[in-house]
Length: 109
Image 1 (cartoon, rainbow, N blue to C red):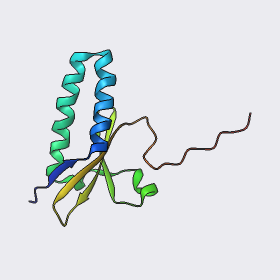
Image 2: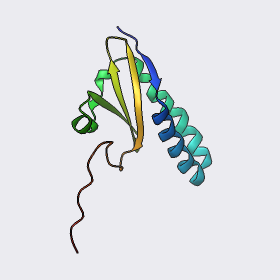
Image 3: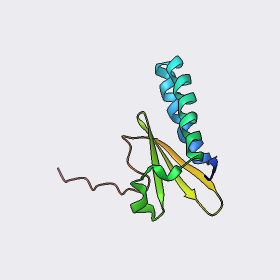
């Protein structure tokens, strides 16, 4: 079985930090636990990352992207089979629009 190197990109790290700070401002102890468990989930991508569903971003960015759901967040990543690497591209709250998803036009009032 192939073991992939998991690389968390700076953009994903920024998303993690933003979410951590949001949670920490409301529940400091929960934030630390959330962060530990998030990284534990990210670490699971080293084994069988293709078990995860395709991400909605795949449509708009024309890339083979997948996502792993962790609590209220989505971990969006790309699997590079040839180089045996998984690139974590985004960590976002699930309620946010997908990266690259066009905004719906506002209806006139």
